[in-house]
Image (tube, rainbow, N blue to C red; front, side, top):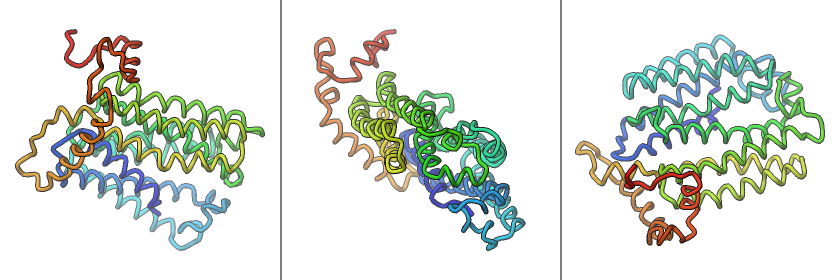
Length: 342
């Protein structure tokens, strides 16, 4: 009922948002934010299945779920959704802050009502669903004490928003016949062969996603090494997207989908390791923090990575001619370096 794999992904992004804020990392708050978000995700998923039970009975991939199979009644599922929703928002409210709790409650509503009700009515459901997916990392950031309007928060939410399009268009392409049988309005369902719209959207959003590491470095949200590693990470993602664009087959769509599964944790991990907020948080550890090894581990990996980056270890050099990608990007955008007079 809770769609455990989906909930695990939601918790991952929430935890990443929390850690991206920098130290000190307060484990009780991190645990509350992660567990509360998991309960909210469980509630949203359960409400989704309560509403879609008749459509789920028409699809092979959902036929064995508890509601379509008759293992759980609709009333019991609704009770579960209500309990997890109330306990999740209550936990967030009592152990994090009101804004994080409000975001959790809003996400239950967005997933269970606009997104779920749009699925059989409009392809726009995918864009609404992307908003739902962009909120959990923002919840983690806010729970850690971050400003929801900070540029780092925008990066986290924007990354999740853009990531979902290659991920979900590839998935819905693989199950287009099932979605059609269930009566859902998905782009690959309405896109006739040779699936030009689907391939174009996968390629377009993969390109948008690939710009984020460069932009985050250009605006000094992360160290330059993030741009270097981002080029390698996105290079492969763009390669599989291009391969699907050339040959619109299930095999190539599956490569896009499986790539998206490891791409996201890699991107978020790299963002945390290279985030400037860890520089600004300093080396001090809160006196009541019982597990400073989290901060120390992150900083140790960050320091090791800096040894490998020419920009970090030797500076930009005269006139910024060392070839570092962030230097070139900043020059194009006209962004001043940290510490320069404005």
